Length: 376
Image (tube, rainbow, N blue to C red; front, top):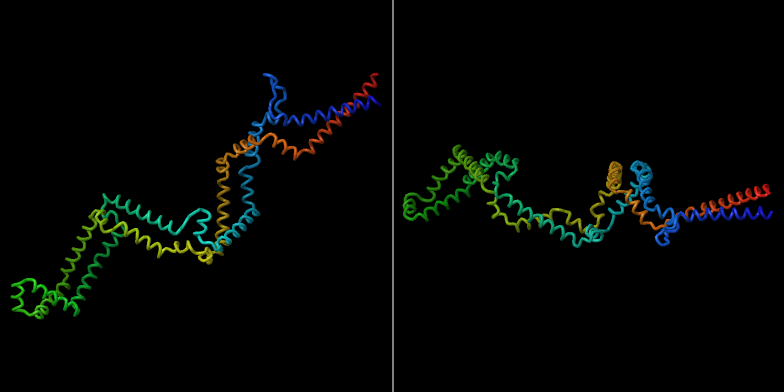
């Protein structure tokens, strides 16, 4: 009996210690051990020795089997996921749109933008100055006709007859009026006064009233003559052609940069509501749109965003270099931490393996003791 018990105990100890040692040798020693130039066998442990290879294989496994575009795409398009994202987006959009914060404060808090109104106006001024300089710099080799859009040129030329008719009508109405007749009398008096002897001689034979009575009908007749219309139309056509042929740079002296910038700034401040919006609470100008944004725009935006993500998943995962990220992370993971993590998950199973080794060793010891007894 003592022999049997002794062999069973010895076998169990050997089996348990062997399995326990084998488990520990998975991680330890953490680094190789040497005696002089010779490295001790089985150092470092299996996992430390294969750490880089393990990291590479884990990276490949994650990309090939765990984090795939098909799996992520399937999860993104699930109704439960889409609904939860949509509800979250609705809540956040309502919270944002009903906020008491102004755009200026939001820009200041999140983007460190100081005095956003002043910044907008400064940017507009810079843009106007740059556009002014660039426009006239490019205008050196161009004429006004070349710079004007074709639609405007056609519209002006199409309306020249109407302009001629309007000028003649206004002139006829004015000359035919009492005010026009009085102005004609003043002009005759001024003409006679400024022409010395000739003026005096004319005044001797004709009074001012008689001259006005004679010239007034003739002037009206001149304005109603068809030849006058043709002459005025030709004059307008010639002036328009001359204007189109003028170098574009000639108008720069009439358009001062400071005036353009000032007018643009004033128009922005008075006509464009963005400047006023910057200082108002968000709910003051988003109120009428809050329901439409939350119930219509946000769901559509979520749907479009998810579809875009799904369509670009392969490209995104490729650009992320996920395999390289996993490899680097695992390589940077210390063996001590890795051992602690594995043992925290599988400590009970490792103990059972040790106990199984002891059980098998005890069973082998029992068989050996019985064989020895039978031989004796």
